[in-house]
Length: 280
Ligand SMILES: [Fe+2]
Image (cartoon, rainbow, N blue to C red; front, side):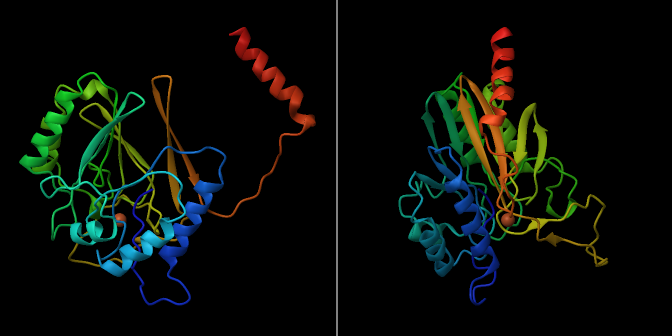
């Protein structure tokens, strides 16, 4: 899950929209029949990085029965994060880490820089990532980072092409592109797939309201009354690592009904489909 933005409306009664959307998304995740090994929250956990918002987040997460990995987004603060979630690894001031789970190297990056909306990836982080990749050469790799290192076309949210932090990221991953199965991001608040130096970049839609689907140029000189943020439903991504393949599923937390249940009337169809597979 990504971009939860707890605390956007801290005084809303009875409950702010973003807390409701987070609860709905967690409920949906916990209701589906597959048990995740971990939950990654890839940044913009809170809207202002304040302690109250992190405490409210922790409260909402307390019934999650599997490990949770907190990541930094541009709306977060490292101090607030570490205060509410003291188990978050802090390596020389950066909340990044990497671990191998079932043969998959999972890398969680920290692209936060105080005072910036856009991403950051300094030489220290570049060197840490390069060393992490070198120590795990050949291990299939899944990278999470808040800021997508791509120009998506949503101009107001995008980096300029060739920003130094993106160059640094590319340098750290140079020579390891073939082992990076996917780079999963947040920040853009929409479902987007792109490429970075031959690697697949996917953006998981936000838990908070979405960024509108508008690829026209935008000008800071003229406010043209376009839609910027929409009430489209929250979504989470479920990443499945099985038999050496990484596959990502998405589910929204909107209202919907089951249209068909698997009863005896559908058994012949399921049987036929199974037999087809055996037949190759
Ligand atoms: Fe965000």
